[in-house]
Length: 296
Image 1 (tube, rainbow, N blue to C red):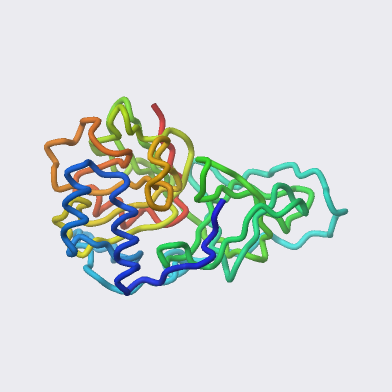
Image 2 (image 1 turned 135 degrees about the horizontal axis):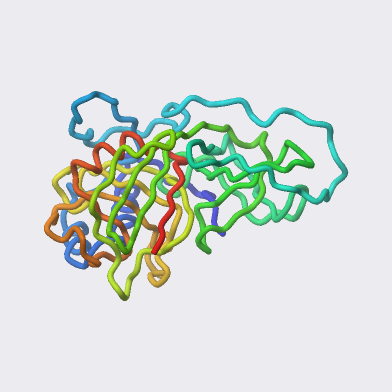
């Protein structure tokens, strides 16, 4: 597993190149060629969007803001008496269909195979695209409230580990996304209530969209909302099962499109495309940490 050991900050040419290449991994061959050739399609990093009643056009290039400005931080796991090293953790779930939590790395965080167990990897405050490093929170250890069970934005898909609660900041998330590949639909729920359901295009037969339980780990805004990614991309903590040699391992995203006539088909390199109007609405609601379930 790779952490954000050498994060690239947004705003410079290298950062723009990396962000463009990341999104290319989930798009059709036509989109890939076009995005590499046209600099205006390079996306910028996450930025909060106003929740106005009339959907505004997502902003063009602007600096990234800290993820903890998007949602209100909540108190960390209450302190409990220390237990003996190597305690056998019983996971107390912290995620329901209506409520979830995201863990934002404060400065750096090591993830472990078990509470007080061996270290697996180190993650810095920013990821490779220069935006805050986010873990999806699954639960906490009953035997020691100082440890959280988290999902990581790394291969293999859905990989889990333990992180010290003191190394992250918790953010409450009330949204959930479900992707139904057979029905070609993406649905967003808030507080358990369906708000958006829209038709989607999914991965082609030889480059399928991976199934499983994931979470939103970053959000990207292209400078041209009429380009191949539409007005934005919602990064998911999943990777292509076949495109492992792509930059950053072939990450998956839910994004807009400039080919709406292909919606409903299996045509992408693994990303999920939806109509641009639906993407703008979903982008505002799907904060970092939002659970994403992709089922066949």
